[in-house]
Image 1 (cartoon, helix red, strand yellow):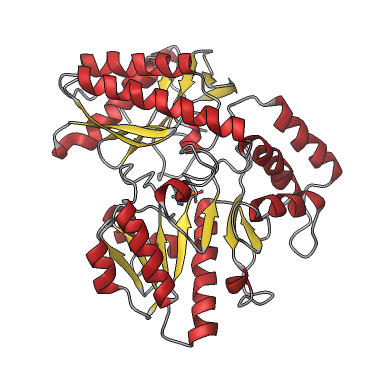
Image 2: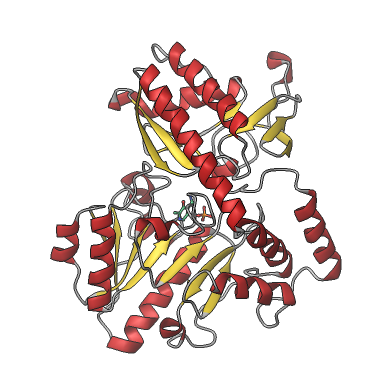
Length: 418
Ligand code: PMP
């Protein structure tokens, strides 16, 4: 049994020592339900959602339309494996292929699985077109690609990687946005370069136009597969269907996940013909990936998100959010800089580096106590990724809370026992 300290706290909303492995925090907020951009905890307190379950719930909470599609599909058929297929999977793949010049879609269940598949497909392509010895994978400082061993090997953050060495061989870290480092390091021993157009976890920095152009041209010249990891940025989050459009990246493959199935687990790799031709039956697979329920919901999500009017509203909401965040930076000495693009935005908080992580944790708790759920990116970036359906007055509501909490910030006092 997990310990729920009702007596001391007279509250149900905080769970202490949940029966989950110790990789997750020892105190968790117990959420009960949601509607639109709001979530409600077990005590009935309301929270404005500026995090979307880490950039997942793009269409908000409590969606009767998506719930009905999932329920209908569950009654019809839930799972068939990839030995067979279903109409929702075919429809969803068809829609995704048309997001660019792609020939096929590979479905997984999580972001890290999409990354694993993309890296493996790039290695297959290099092996089949160039022979052995062209297997290396380049990724960038500050990147986050996932926690399974392949994706982790391309996520060069010591805290994530060091306890799990040895990692997959042949994975190199290059400095993000450093064109010279690309020119000096990439050669035909590389199968793939994987890049985030905007680093969601690593500090909300975007590729510069010059870096994007250099990536495009070097990868094209050397026939290195360029993978855009749009697990966090994809499907409208940054004000375009794919962030690659404003970032100026021309990737060969794109990974998608978080918002794809309205909160259900589904990821996708968009694969061009030239790479798809090099993949043989049985060389990669997933039992659950692309099942009928997740793909049925994803089809509806894509219909909504890929509508020009929807994207225009996301852009307007993004502009409003950035305006409000700039105002916060003008009024608070702690708020140093606005980062991000569209509805994946943030504020660099000027805490001293040595205790920035602790103080960010405390800041996020204070926001939570005032009814706002937000995220961290890097060490000191307050990350904001609301549902894409957020209204301007809700953006104002959240920004007012951030401004008020930052105005009260003085020194760090540890508050919650974990
Ligand atoms: N790539 C990117 C860009 C991500 O932001 C994430 C998750 N934050 C992942 C991959 C891994 O996704 P998942 O946690 O679903 O495996």
